[in-house]
Image 1 (cartoon, each protein chain N blue to C red):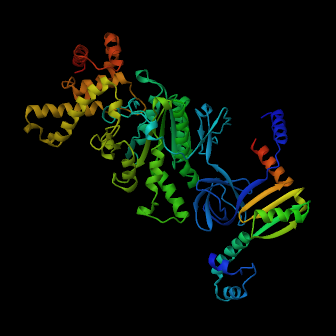
Image 2: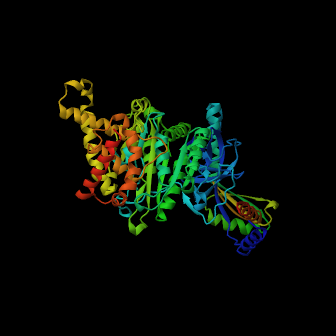
Image 3: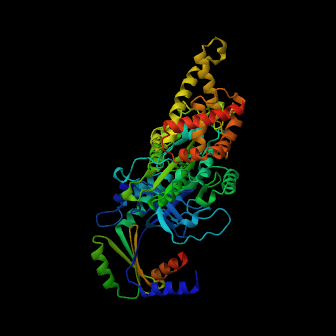
Length: 505
Length: 112
């Protein structure tokens, strides 16, 4: 800000001097502990209202009792003297958002955490807590959000505006899956509009957050990504607010008519932070010591994900919450809560991960309730067949150890299933485009790889695209359009794949 | 405690000696702490504190009595206000003083 601007501002303020008195509702600090201030007075304070302490620090009213108000301190320094005055501000917690935030790592209040100064210009103040869009403001989820991961895009497709839970034990590849999804938004598939991404890290080690940010930067994904971080070393208040800040940023872009993706990594730690706050606020503890409104905490957050109707700008906000399970128990309190809130879940399993199947998606326990409608026609055509083959394989897999006693048809089905499982393996940080996925999935699902040795499937997949692009370019263009493949296209594709498959046997 | 604090005052606004001695004799140390908070709240609720710099007390008291009927007025002189008046009624503070205005201005500049 220039000196002239300041002078002009003061002049305007002095010119506009009104003799209207300043009215404030005040209270006094009675006790302080663990970032919670108990204040006497504040009789007109509202739930969720910002209050200001005498020294300028801010607090958030979290509960209103008959004689006291409990205020959550919004600063890392929780030293507050008893008797200090605090006053209501009449405002709710908000954040300044603009395009300047792309590529930056910020805390829930919008302050930079990446060591570089941040100047947010042309900003809009967005409220952290807002009511989710109503039914009439929404449209159906019909546009795909491509993750670039075959097993997800084929079996549990995600649409723009959907809420898809990613659940699994620690070290099963949950963060890797969402990072791949963010990276995949760099190359716009099927000519779809760009998806802006917000990655919200809650309760993670700072080192882990730094590694994720570095990877996103390395993959040139930070240009369209904003990271909101509240590490495990920050007060519980920051961890509680971080997902709401990320959601508010996502909503800002949604309301501009853009497509936004918000990743909450993870909501288990968010629930822990909220449990900590609730216990400090002396709220009654319920199951597993979580407060009674833990479901409402997550439902009001995730309900804000939406696909808006054209009349409302047509933007979307997709939510990918992550939940960490303990010993694979998806029937625990928080996982079941979030499963029931979301439109589907991707379940990652430790055993599959250790067996080398990565991404370790358990196809049986994973489901997408609305994403199927969002798949491209060609993708739906090939993935339907593969899903059927995979389901049959899984029901027969138990018998595979008695291989010699099985009839030929069953043996063939098991062999095909093994090839499907093999083709669904995908290394980290290598998301695939729609065309590559359609061809791989079609090849395995329709039995074109039945004669290819299992150990050669990876090699086939690596080389087939180059071959098809050079020798069947026009066919590739047709498939890449996303339209349903007619019989002639399918025949041509089958012949091309079979011919190539013979060369890798 | 809130009820006890209310009963400590007579309808005329005086201290009820009987209740006061009962409180002092029977309440434990921790109970007294809660009682004191409740008593202070009750005092704030019953009384309007007016800080004044310049102007006539009679004029100000008349206007404020109309605004807060049935509440006792406690008027004091405070030259630090510069000019104007500052009224505290319960948790509400109405600051119509030069000092308050300057403080607000400084806060605005600080935000900028």
